[in-house]
Length: 493
Image 1: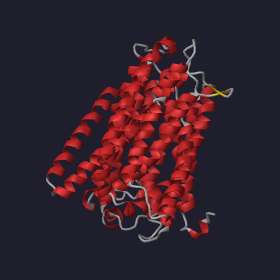
Image 2: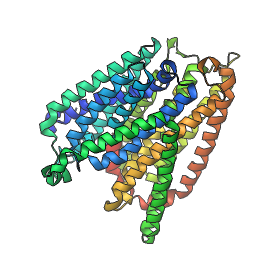
Image 3: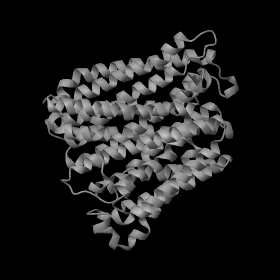
Image 4: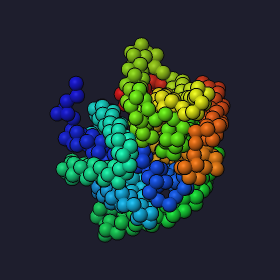
């Protein structure tokens, strides 16, 4: 039984902050696409492109956020500022005016993108370096994040069913304010320790203007990209290619053993891109599919597109618990799971998941409406794959990459996520064919396109899984299962 009295002061507060601060992102993930199409002048394909670019920019800004927090502004200060930006963004998005919505989206994604490392660093610094309770705290925090997602998708689905989008965004904004109030109460416990900001930059006059200038520049840049989502999409591809080229160049300059590890890392991150693409499809193609191509009823209970996303978060919680229990049992038997096996098994789950939509279409009757259980099964099975893949991906940088390169390669992992999410836009538009407006979208006309999309994704997943299977022995040699086991358990418990 968890006893917060045995943990440092501030852990419970950070857990609650994680729960409430997650709501804004999750509500937008569930509702933004339909909101843009229903309450602005955007067509369905334009809404798909903007939504995918919006969420991809979140991870592109993670690269910048990692350089600001702890360097030019304290982690707690940047986190507080990011929450306020998200609050303002949600309030502006709730106003049914196209230009104001875009300003709100730019404001929100700047806040969301810049705070990536803040809450994790605040939690980390509550513990000493050798304190094993830190793993427990991170496991609990991850659970609170998923609880926030489940709550958000549940509420968003109910309000979407009554076309109360603005109320959903106001609900999310209220949760952000609760997170701010808890954060202020926790302020004295989460000061920076040993960071560049605490030791050096906080004593410089530059602290008054460097961070604000960076945030304002991000706001202006994000607002420009909200008006030009196609450019934002292309920018993400270009940055990804440039960063990948630099990684390959960097690898070529290393000794053979380390060079091989870098190449293996770059191959491994492909698995993250696949999951990220599915995450992007959740807020675009899958929601469109649930709305126009399914019965929208599960055992007689009406199901909205936003509600379907809830099952992925529930799956993460359940499968995370199951896999952690299995890993603990294997560790007691001195037979820990090999990292390569976990990644390959996770990818194999994606193959099964992608087949759910074609199977549902094949079994659809004369109405061409697919039972809503099939996209739900897709997300549940994807969550099982996510648990296997992400646990290794988050651990491998520390195991394979030298310390002075770890920040760079973690940033590259975020770029893979941005690249994957960004792909969701054109994939969703391809599935819709020439149906620009909702009134022209029918299950009969779009089912063949969805069938083609998910069969192609299945084929790609099969090829990548085979490649990982062939590389498994090499990967297992590089990633010592005994060394990775404690990290993996902390990711999954």
